[in-house]
Image (cartoon, rainbow, N blue to C red; front, top):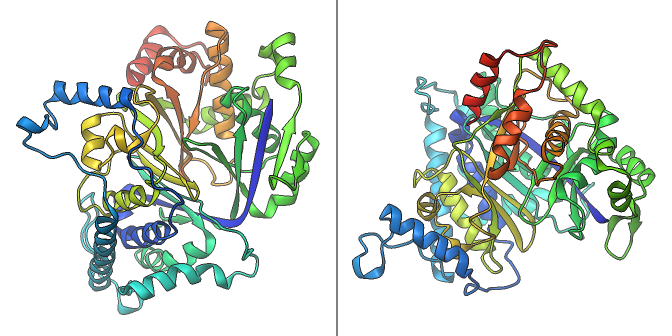
Length: 477
């Protein structure tokens, strides 16, 4: 096994917004994305495409009579944006920012749930950041005010994710303070207590591997000692790597734990590297005794029983974890800005954009080629197979303290051990941690087995009857 962990020194902030109040933060989100798109990428390779993916999308379009061939097309597919179109859309983004800012400064309008308008006084107005100069200065100067920021560190990390009930925004703390402070103040004046800016700052651990060890076990192995030491973590999966967010205040403790787990700092790669024979030992001595953490499993499901929380498999929701092609980073970010502006009404139930480096932007998109096409993401615009379908398992954290620890790791450990018990195999899991909920994404082919695993969990200390088990299974599938 060869695992490499890069510790990004940029302080990050996490904002949780109910889905029906997301519109209050639209202008700030657009400013963030516009600023990120201006950072650029190093290559332009628009001709890179996947024949197998195009074939899959083509067959779906024939079946759904969507985006027919050019001879009989009634709807043109969304094209790649060239440089002029990108520039034009950037201007449209600025105009949209102006529009949202002016509208919100006059009156706080209705939410998507149909609540009545609530006016605010002038002190709570969201002021327009209208001109491109002020917008770019607002963005680029954000890092200058924090003496802890390393001027030589190029931070590209940000994460915007939506579920049916929540939007979570993660970005550099200085950007959060610069771009989101006004809508946060508006929410305070309106007494929207469910809008939460987490007080703690975080750092990101970016986890890479040589591919010789299963991803699910790699993350569980890395985070097990952290969770068992009551360190609050956020788990995120991108198409390119995995990210674990750790509290900034516990940086030294985390480094100490990593060092004790045979991680050594490499000046060459500027990261912590662990190379040992643990994976070989697991295979020879029996993996079952080494997987995950029984302690975290017991702790997590005992807490679930006390708070009446049960993970729910959203079997009808089919997603892809994909990424932008080389040279398409700016284009992809601008497309996401258009989607998240709400102008095109194409925001899906589950959606995420995560940037981890200058050339790496990951996306969570609908499996449906029709819905992706409407969002501007046909298979030629993304990487990875459209056959690798993932299904979300949602865990409601609203009944738990924000500083709860080991929850996602405990559930993931239970699932890995449960599947291992059923068919003696491992499977890939991905993570989509929100501030008020946890999402674990599983391969579609494992849904039935994992549903059985969850149904057979003894939450209350008593064996379930057949009727209750059947009821949970029907919700899952």
